[in-house]
Length: 253
Ligand code: NI
Image (cartoon, rainbow, N blue to C red; front, side):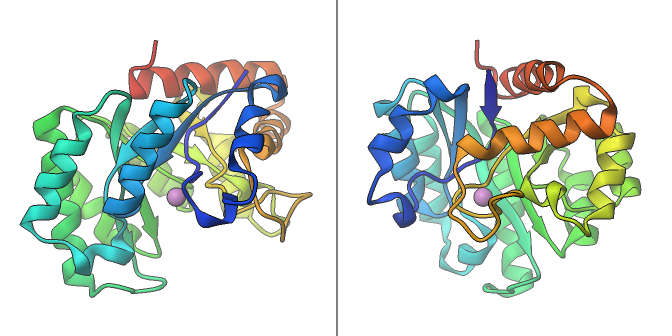
């Protein structure tokens, strides 16, 4: 049974068939899903999904794209939301220098504030890092979150090694299956399975052979299979170990 550590079922792309799709997860081998928020509205929607579906857990947080909309009150509201049942992390939070939708200094400031919030609440953090590896690692080295996963990991082998030495987890997504992604292939070969989780980031980042389509947790098996192929181990071993890793990380029994 697979654990999709990162999917966004509050996304409007799921409006036409959300309930039908989610009802099909269990019989298709998807046991658990963590649904992170990307702003206050979607954090609330994540909590609502977790209430509705026993196999969905929520994270609450504001994505770097929306850092410019944050203020002290946003942090208070997140703190309140984080007390709801089945909220297992603060996320997704981080830095995105690819889109630069918020000024970089603003992104850094609110990443740090949300890391401090997670520490106060003793919750793990889910980190989004796109084209911001240097600044992101600088902040994480300084703030030292208790538990941290680098979601949809896209860094080098060197960065991956440093991250696991600092006690972080790496979550691997669909781009591992893309033909020219040698970097993530090397990361998966080098880093022990005990430090890996798997995810879809649905509705984004569909793996091969579903590129161009809307992604869903039903496709997380392609990521697991690719990891199994690269490590020369069975699909079952990858699914069991990554499931256990994610349960431990998010403290889900
Ligand atoms: Ni995401």
